[in-house]
Image (cartoon, rainbow, N blue to C red; front, side, top):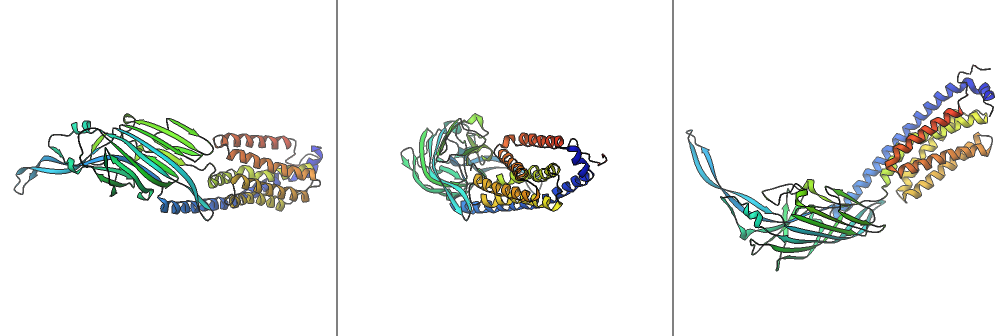
Amino acid sequence: MDVQKIQKKLGGEYTFRVLLLVFLILIILFPLGLIIDIVEDRSQTAAYAEMDIMKAWGGMLTEAGPVITIPALRNETIVKKMEDGKSKVERVNTPFTFTIAPKNLTISADLNTEIRKRGIFSVPLFYGTLTLKGSFDPALALEAVQPGEKLNFSQAEMFVYFGDLKGVRAIKSAKWSDKELFFQPGGSSDLFYGSKSIFAALKGFENKEMAFEISFDIQGGQSLRFAPIAQNTKTVAASDWGSPSFQGSFLPTGSHITDNSFSAEWNINYLSREVPLFWRDGISLSESMFGVDFYRAIDTYSLNTRAVKYAILIVIVPFLTLFLLEIVAKVRIHPVPYLLCGVGNAVFYLLLLSLSEQIAFYAAYLIAAAAVVALLALYARSLLPTWTKAGFMGFAVLLSYLLLYAVLNAESYALLIGSLVTFATIAFVMFMTRNVDWYGEKP
């Protein structure tokens, strides 16, 4: 490449043209901002559709319990001030609820999944069996009963709490020692946010260790949460879902994940969480929940959002490529073709969004990238003298899309990849323009 001849012919215009390219790039950022708004709007629409589907199905399933509650009275001495200024001492009975957590609790969740759709939007739902098995030993708790406190054992009840009772399809069996339990709805509770309860009377409650086993048919969507309410809580969850995301205050002690299923086990001791073994009146378990999200390995809208956010690194590629080809090919290219190439590159993100709502993301990406690469390469042929130089335009855009795809699939290394690509691009441009006479003063 005879850089001196190129400098002689076009050198006086370089500074102006570079500033013009910067201005055109800034113009292209405007439609990219609109595309970001469209992605966010579609993401919200999808979220609303998912919530509507789950609302009818039972929502995210949250479970805590069982616990035993015992109505109680506390005989207290209070001092009242009379109108004449004198004080009067009275004995009153103040009601409260004494609650006992299980000594041992094994939670078993065996679940199947399905995808429910509304239009083009979908949400993963699950259904299956939830079994609560363990024992209560009230001896330790009853030793903590204070003088003046009287517990009414004949009205003891067992409570189980759910985030939404729609998630309880049926109670398959419920046994307390050798007795059958009959559960009924118990209303709202403050045990965790939005909790609802079911309860059953405990006939023949005694101060000795007694076993229980309760089996539910359940359903829910997106996530499953439990509370480590017992002195020793063991939880086993299994499903035909291949992309679980374990969440909450405790991670599994062991798990096995395949492409089509997962199983996980948690073993939690009461010393590991801030939940007492018995309590008076209410407590909150919201901060102690743990479980699994039925995570979709490819989240279309988050990937689209990330793709548009990295667009600034990609949108400059057609401009820089045309600018370098203009120098090499010794042709003059009007600003309008620059602008059209930039708009064509921006349309890639709109194509990606619309196609990924209908087909798999990787297929949508392939189609959108191939379409824009072919468009820009063919258009460059009308501006440049040979197919070789036009092919270089297509190759540069294709390479940028390959790098973007790598960034989208390597979230932890996205910043590193973006930084290296930016550095390499600047170094390449500096090398190609190292001998350009930007002032156009050389003969």
